[in-house]
Image (tube, rainbow, N blue to C red; front, side, top):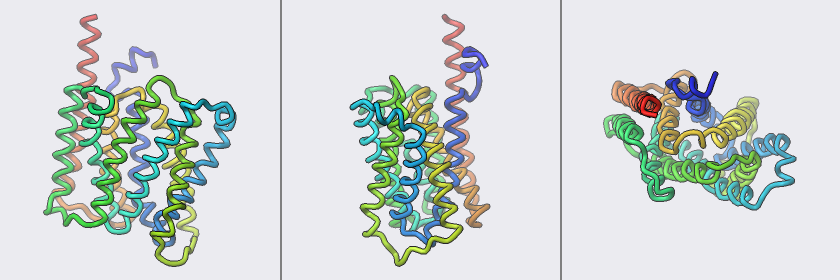
Length: 300
């Protein structure tokens, strides 16, 4: 595919990759709920990201040996945000449903353009801005009182969404000019350390590692951590933070669908309507960007 054809496509390469890892992330809410039957939440985080760090470390060992101070700093700072975000999310899943946690995590789309403006001094495009409003309306439908009460777990997931919004913007800041593969390794190390350090405070009895929970840890480490975050770190820089956040709001849609299939969690009519509205927001953002790019080519 030529560069010109790539620009004309409805979903450019970066958007397709980000949407693919969003599907993977959508599955993690159900997989994590299964793992939490046997493992304390922060112990699960520590195990997941230790295994992921080993996988990435083997792949990027030559880069790690010659890493720059800037890459180390970026990896550590991003790791703190990633680790705290997952900590709040994993603990929150103890108190709320997988489907609802997915939708609340999606509220990061509301915070990302605000943080992008404050941190990077960049205004989101008109299409992205309207897309955010449409997606926010869909999220409101799902999280309205008719869809269920707002509980302690929901609050933790909402804090997680704010932290992930910071992560998306700072990932853009640190990787816009170049992508150093070893920063993913540093992120995973810090996230694992945060998990193990906080694990004693969120323990709920003895650890019983069954075949099911071990499989969940391996899945989360390989697909949802190693593959997904590596792809995000490499390809998010080819789009904008706000557009990336809009794509990531499909995570709750995937989460709710997979929670229905795996955990038999159901969605009511209001939740289904919210999911449809959110998808409309994503589609609008993509179509508007395609239309704008087409106009620029005609005028050049």
